[in-house]
Image 1 (tube, helix red, strand yellow):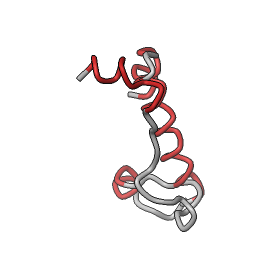
Image 2 (cartoon, helix red, strand yellow):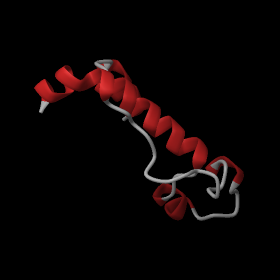
Image 3 (cartoon, helix red, strand yellow):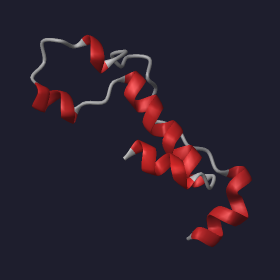
Length: 69
């Protein structure tokens, strides 16, 4: 699989599975939600961070994965 990433890295696109248009903006603004429920959710700001970390990791930036985890 790693070989496939190396061969086609210039053609690989990382994105969300759907538009973020109708996604709430940021989980930080949700002050009334229970902490356990908050841990299950990812709003637009959090999803962008996750997609960005994935893209950097797939492009070879292993440090990004450690920071994200």
